Image (cartoon, rainbow, N blue to C red):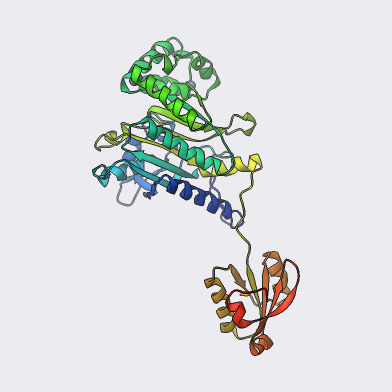
Length: 416
Ligand SMILES: [Zn+2]
Ligand SMILES: [Zn+2]
């Protein structure tokens, strides 16, 4: 037997209704905000992620599935959803169309991570990107889309928000961090020592306990923000408040990617018992399009991991509504298969979910199976029924059995 590779999972038929539901909710919410779906390939040139995700990130340094194809090109399975969308935006000159351009995607992402609960090597992301709107309203819209997505499942996590500042602010802040960490850097982890040189902001993200203690007293971005950045951030908070978004300012939030500017946000359940408590997040990346060779265009967006959301709902005891059961099971006792298939097809055309025997069970076994499927009605078709043009119908909910003319059955009238 060949086993499934480490760190990935199957979605089995009995669980796939959850995925269908999540997808429907995502499509529905995206539609309400007039987002259009974009599909980009599973793999891209490795260069895209080096430049688009950032060479100082853990994703690029440790987690990418990179390989040479038969033409000796270095390709990488996408570790996140944004870079490919930005590449496509540039390549298709979308900035020539009326802005904003609002897109969403549901895509697989691949990261070579240490497998643990809620952290898979292949996961699925629902993401949204709003191009060409450098405004607080666009920030609010992105946060509202994600918030409403969560609310559709009956949850309302807190949106942690932070402002990383404009280019000027960030320069100032990076310097402030360097000044602060200079005293401690020799006692910090090797990753932080590297980050100190490449991108000191990333030190704030370190998960090593000793580093975290030092990080706790580091200067806060709020201390160095310029007036514009401060005003924008205040305005954002006012608007989120008036839109009833459950949010909190978290000065330590930087997110794991290099490309963020100004706004970052993360959806968190503060109930720490649930372990993996970040449910998704995003922010603004106003330099990314230019960074990847396009005409400077502001972007705000987010990504939500679907597997993690499903685990979270499970932990919360929130059940996703199951698909409806089989409406009609057709039990057959005849060799006249074309007759049986015709009845089944006619009912399906009426929109009913119909099963018929395709494994030649005995009549008794067919009824047992119909029961297992929780079919609402069982129609029995035998030689007698075909001759008399009256089919035997059993209402499986109340157990009543009666005859209905073929004509009525084919109209979907199963109640006699
Ligand atoms: Zn600023
Ligand atoms: Zn560290």
